[in-house]
Image (cartoon, rainbow, N blue to C red; front, top):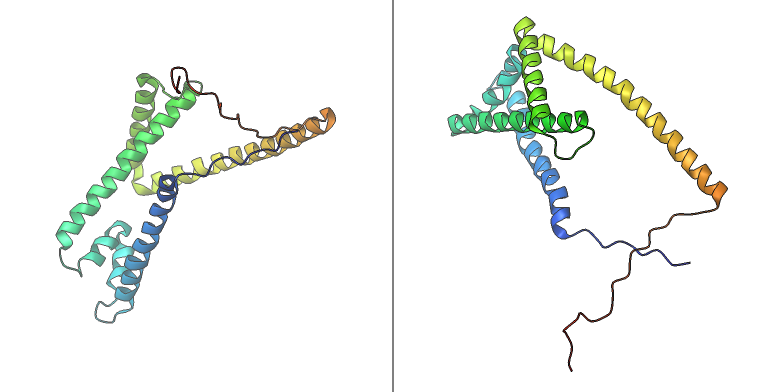
Amino acid sequence: MATPAIPPQRPCRALAALFAPTLFSMVFFSIFGSSALSQQLDKATGGALYTAIQADVSSAIFVMFEKYPLSGVVGIVLLFVVYTFSVVSADSCTIVMGMLSSGGSEDPKTAPKLLWGVAMAVSAGVLHAMSGLAALQTASIVAALAFTVIMLCLAYATVRMVRADYAHELESGSEQTYVPAEPSMAPAEGSGSS
């Protein structure tokens, strides 16, 4: 029986892609979180952040940045970042929904993606027009609750499948191991000395 080989390690770029966003987020939230806390506890500001949060949650970050230089530029950058996040999230959602509705195809056609994009935009617009943010939050909670039930069913099915597969392996006496194909040591044609 062959000894299974350990697959090669991930390249440094993959690790950097994994840890760079995490480290950036830690630094970002440490700096701006402590800055917001400092402003909130400062008697000179009089709890301006708390007041802004009570009035409108989305305005709190702009109130915090008003205390620093270039607050107008930072506000424009923040709006651009939020817009970019929204567009990328909506695009990703339409691609995933297109993949799911086209039988798992990794490259769904334009029609299902367009259909899901329009459906999301219309449903968000209708919910927002009906009663603003409260309807959107309620719809999110209801959808998340339904998705939680689906995820619990999937977790149960996964556990059953793994147990059945393990029992089948014990009955048949076969074990599956990872053994990579060994590279060919033969020289390529036309190479070598003659």
